[in-house]
Length: 477
Image (cartoon, rainbow, N blue to C red):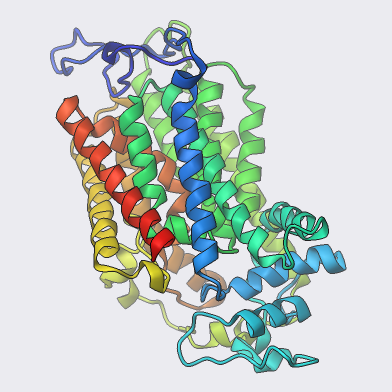
C-alpha cells in the first residue's frame, strides 16, 4: 500500500501550476500524481481500513440486534425479491404479489408502520391482499444483482445453521456492503494523497448518519449504494493512473447500475469531475497524464455502461410486466396527470438529497443527543459542498469533486420527480437514500477541506463523539 508521509505530499486539493499568479500557495499536484513514498509497518498501512470496516460492521450488527421489526421502506418487498430468486429461481416482475417467506416475516416480525397490523404470525396460509398495497411487490424495477449477492450470503448462512431466518444475515450483509464501500473510500483517499485522520473521521461521521446506517442494517438495494459510488471513484482513479484498461470503466458503469439505477448519481459526479479534468489539461503537455480526448472517452464508456444497463433493465421490466404500473395502490395515490410544476418549488423535494444523510432512526436511537449529532453531520456536509462550489477552480481536483457532488445532489431530487412523472405520471417525494452513492465523494471533499492541526482535532473529536453517541446508544440503550 502506498501512502504519503508528510503534509507536503498528502494534500491533493492543489493547483497544477503554482507559479501562476492566481494559484493558491499550496503544494504541487501533477497531472498523474506519483503514489508517494512507501510506508513501512502493517499497522500504519492498515489502521484506516480497520477503523472504517469495524465501524461499519459493528454499527450494522448492533442496529440489526436492536431493530427487529421490518423497515417501512418496503423491506418485505426487497426480501420477497431476494427469496423468490433463491427459493423459486424466479425474478419478480410488475404484477407479482408477495410470496410466503416475505409475508411470514412481516407477520411475525411486524413492520415499522403506524396504524398497520399485519395478519397473525400463526396464520397457516397468508393472503397477499391482507398486506399493505394489496401485497404487490413494488421493488420490481430494481435489477437483480443486489438480491443475488445479498441472498447468496443470507441463504448460505441459513443453510449452515448460522441463522434460523434469512432476514438477519441479509441485514448484516448491508454492513458488509458499507464496510467494503468505506474501505474503497480510504483507498481512493490514499491514491489522492488525502490526509488520513480527516479522511477516516469524515468516513465515520457520515457512515453513522441516519440514512447510511439505517440502509446498512436493513434489506434494501440502497444498502450497496456507498459501495457502488466508491467503486466508481476507485476505478476512475485507477484508469487515470494507467492501472486499469479503459474498457473496464464501461464494465463498472454496468455493475453499479445493475445494483440500483439511482447509483447513476455517483456515476454522474465522477463523469462531471472528469470533464473538469479534461478542461484542466486542455492545450497542455500531459507529461504522462491523460489527454482531454482520453478523459472524454472515459466519460463516454462509464456513463454509457451505466445508462445502457439502466435502459436495458427498464425495457426488460416493462416487457415482463403483467399489469399497468398504475394498478399498484402505491402508485395510484401519487398519480398526477398534469405537469407537476408545484413539486419543483417545494423545499422537501428540491433539497431532499442535499445532503443524503437524514432519515429514519429506530426508537432506540431517537434521542436528543443522536438527533443533535445527526443535525451537525448534515450541516457539515452541506457546508463542505457549498464551500467547494464557492472555491470552484478547475486546477483544484478535490474542490471540483466536492462542488460537483453538491450540484448533482441538488439537481437529483427534481430530476427524480421528472423521471417518475415522465415514465408513469406519478410523483414521489425523493428520499435521501437515493443519493447514497455520493457519500464517498462527500467524504473526500470533507477530508480535504480540513486544514491544520485545529481542524484535524475538531473533526476527529466530532467523529469520536458521533461514534460514541450512536454506537453507545445501540449498545446500552
